[in-house]
Figure: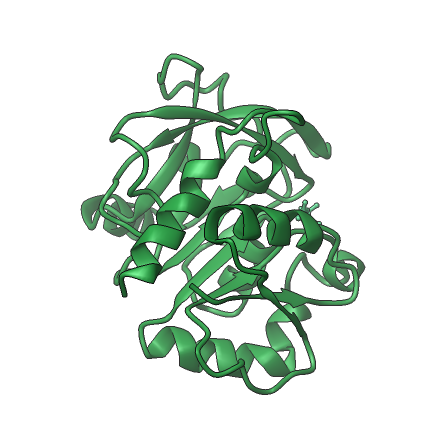
Length: 232
Ligand SMILES: NC(=O)CC[C@H](N)C(=O)O
């Protein structure tokens, strides 16, 4: 699988993402720049990593969504390409219209940097195929604007079409208000596009890919991608 990671001014999680992908695929991802107008031939996965693109000016991800490379990413997604947006990358995907809804300020109006637990809601996707349905894994959140919002009709559509990939839950898998630290609608931590190929999520699975650093709870996401896209 050949992945490309896009960097914007203010991106800060691209190296962690590269290590996570390299660990799972055995291959170095291509590092791409926001001014690029094309993706390298043979790209199987585009990743929009976390950070503070353009200093979060206007709204998180709003300026990045207007970058030259976004047109190529739109085309790639339109052809059925896989696109993963993590944290600021998720914010970019909604700002670019590739996923519905918005990421509002956290309900507490505070930047939240803490562990969280995620419940896997479906497993027939390239991102989640290495998890069990209902499995809970530990991850990390680090954001000021992670409060997922969409109108009721959109939320109902996402639920009805099974496009909620991940929810904030307790360590034992209960979807409670206390587990939902940023106030997201229906505890939503990550959503999919209707073709299941675009995933946006606020927490950082790339933080948990090394037993010597913070465990390997996030590794199945990258291993699943490696497996699913190698076979593609
Ligand atoms: N870690 C991140 O990607 C943070 C995203 C964004 N800057 C926020 O604070 O919400």
